[in-house]
Structures are given as C-alpha cells and as structure tokens.
Amino acid sequence: MFFILGLNKKPVGKEQRKIRKNGLEVNAIITVYKKYFELFFIPLIPFGKSYSLYIPSSDEYFETNYFSKNMPPEYLEICKNVGRTY
Image 1 (spheres, rainbow, N blue to C red):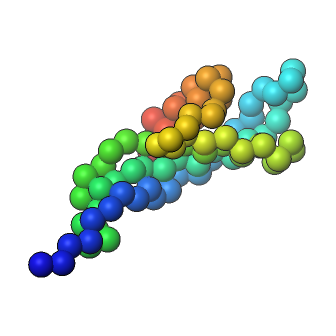
Image 2 (cartoon, rainbow, N blue to C red; image 1 turned 30 degrees about the horizontal axis):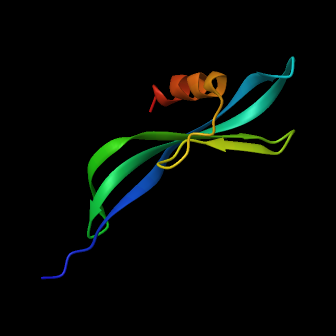
C-alpha cells in the first residue's frame, strides 16, 4: 500500500492593520494560516494556527512556525486578535 502523509499550512485570512512601531502608527499585513495533517493531499486533522506579520514601511517580516517563534509579544497579541475571526 502506498500512502502520502504530511503536514501543511494553508492561508485562511489576510488583513491590514495599523500597529505602533517606534512611536508611530504604520500599516502591517497580517496573514493567518491553519496547520493540517494531510493524507493524499486532503486536509484531515487541523493542528492550530500560525501567523505572519509584514511591515512594508520598514520591510520587516515576523512569523510563528514549528521551529522558532521570532515574533515580539506585542505583535503576537495583535495577530491572535485577527486570528479569532478566522
């Protein structure tokens, strides 16, 4: 028997928010992903959410993933608030 198993993440939402950076309000693009366990490229079991945040004015990119959590805590709270709608 031949099985294809794996983990994958799919984008479920994208929003633009204003955040405070160095005392200024700048635009940030927040993307919410859902992690899935897949069998034959069909998502079966959801594992949770991960987030990415991009600040175009300073060209900074933060994300949460399996191996590192390099997102500052104040930005993580904003991302979690956006993720509650998806």
